[in-house]
Length: 80
Image (cartoon, rainbow, N blue to C red; front, side):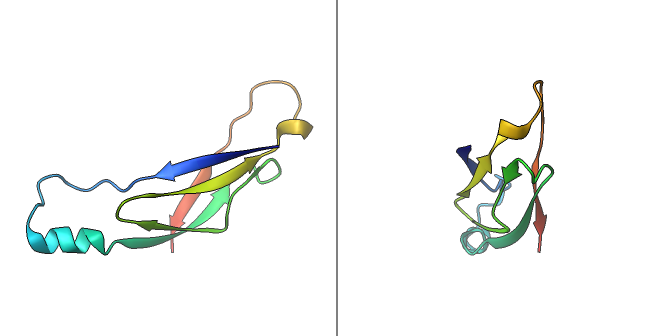
């Protein structure tokens, strides 16, 4: 079993530089429901709060019960 850190950074338009827009960016808070496409070997937190300067969360990967070969999975975030 291995833990990994996933970083998420919001992307903002570079042409919005007025003061009101900058203040709105600083207030950014988005809550996401996280879901692994392979919950039997990749576990992620249930929820994640994204703020203006980015944030990270940890996932656990346990491939010990997988058959040999290449495997892929995703952790998807859904706006709540």
